Image 1 (cartoon, rainbow, N blue to C red):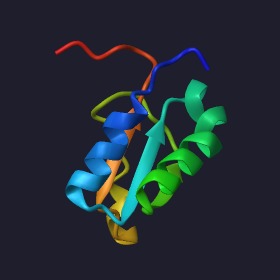
Image 2 (cartoon, rainbow, N blue to C red):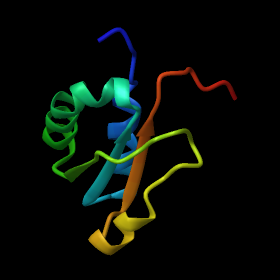
Image 3 (spheres, one colour):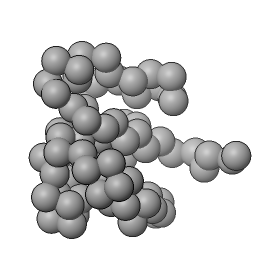
Image 4 (spheres, rainbow, N blue to C red):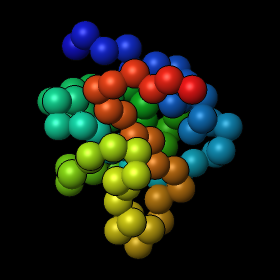
Length: 84
C-alpha cells in the first residue's frame, strides 16, 4: 500500500473518545486493505471494528445506517490528501 493512512491518529481518536464500536469507511481502492486495517486498529484499541463496504464518494458520503448498529465513531479514508 502506497498510502500513509496515519493509523496512529485513528487509534488515538478511538482511545480519546473511548469508542467501543467503530465503523471504518474506505474508498474502493483502499478496500483490499480492510482486513489489515481492521486487525491493526482492533488490536491497538480493543474496539469492535466494522468495515463499511458500501459507497464512499467523499467526506459528505457517510453511512447513516450505522446508527442502528450502535456505532460510536466513524473513520473515513479516501485517496486524496486532505488540506486544511
